[in-house]
Length: 396
Ligand SMILES: [Zn+2]
View 1 (tube, protein in one colour):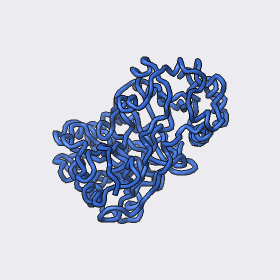
View 2: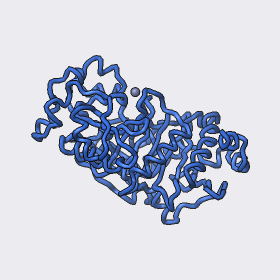
View 3: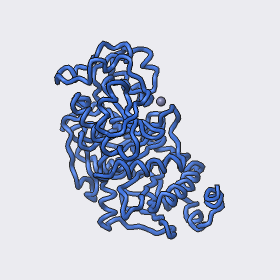
């Protein structure tokens, strides 16, 4: 067994400070033409003027195949709903061509059937936190990494009020298409029915060829202020259990256009809201309002959008214990649990784990998650199908 020097397992985007510890200074704007060693090493380059003068002013396009042309003039290609799925494909092909991910995806491997109940996956991503050596200026240091990523060869998609970037620190190989969906303004993590509705739409449009899973860490398991969701081609172990009928569910609410169930099954604890866009966004808002004011959670929760089933969205709400957001895993160190690993895919920035990691990890998960049965208000809330707030919003 190797000695492990890393104390913290981070599943979200590395913090700006952590990133800058590993990145030399220099302005994106002041960079000489494509200063990355990766692009030079592969002989591929996004173009002679790839860095100089590029702005975040999106270039509109009709077809996803025009993205590469747009990226010669701007960091962002503006895509309509109908082109989103194809544009994400083009975006990953482009970043593969310029070797954007470099070493950060090398050595990745997957182990399934992990843990005492054999229902977890481990995604080893040993180089996930390595940052390519680019020069970033003092000015760039002060900027938010999600307003303007500090990588000169990164390109994104402008979609509705969001910017979709490839996650520069992906959990998954390139084929996993791990993206960060950021607000196009510097606003903090938040929930609104509008944002969730957009994410449900994103999932539908981006998942036309192959389904995508979305996740949101909120203030739990995340170190970036700037509002962002993430999406990938992952099919989480939680969903595999659900689809196989192996996740015991307790029905809390049902209506013509949806239903709400809770589950408490070893590692897995949460609330599942299944239904049409309207049902899911409204009930999510009611749940989030309670999670914001509950002293146990104080606004800490994770959200997952599992693959839709039978045309219905499937939102998972995982309440988090405000006092235990980053619990200590005895054999490992402090772990920043997020939606992705609480959905069963544990991302580890190493190439192996300690022998008793599984048991210790489960114990830590049990401390950081608030089980639905601990939420004193949950049943009462569910008994109000014509909740005044729902009526107010329906007529608004
Ligand atoms: Zn920002």
